[in-house]
Length: 223
Ligand SMILES: *Cc1c(COP(=O)(O)O)cnc(C)c1O
Image 1: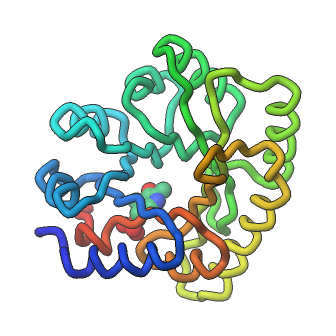
Image 2: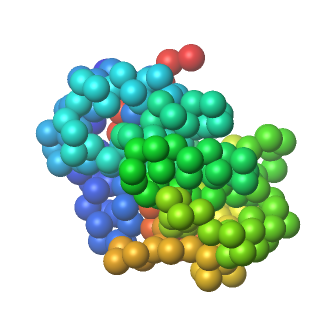
């Protein structure tokens, strides 16, 4: 299925007006689709799988900014350390230490977001509020020289009820404000990555400044 150009350009306009950055989530989609969007001006792309990211990056223009948004195993950080633009899923000290180690090896600083668990669904991924507090304390006591924590990322519950989604995003925004002290934004400010195809409008209303949109632009994924 070809990229929906009209829809993409509509979303870009809408988000630009709100000052929100768009990450186009290209997981499972072929490089041709990524290239088609690239040719329309898109530079930020999100991928969930390490091997898929490295294979695509090798075939696509070097100025693409790759965001890693899937679950990241510690032993796979080394494969993306030289190419990744923003790791959005840092959720343990062990993972952050490994990202720091690989960043040192590659003589660079790797930007990260802390992933926060705000949804109702049980999942192993993401920090809860207490863990986020602990992480913030740890980062201010022993900062990692080659990791920059630029903000927070979260996913709302997969439910129809928009009040539930709204409350979860609202909660993440309060955590974002509360932890502003440990986030280092740089010239573009700090990042609050929340909102996907089905809920990005709610996320933007609740203060998101980065959305991750896949199926709405690239079409539904198979499987
Ligand atoms: C797949 C994915 C998205 C995009 O989902 P869509 O519903 O296709 O927009 C966003 N964020 C994360 C973390 C994802 O895994």
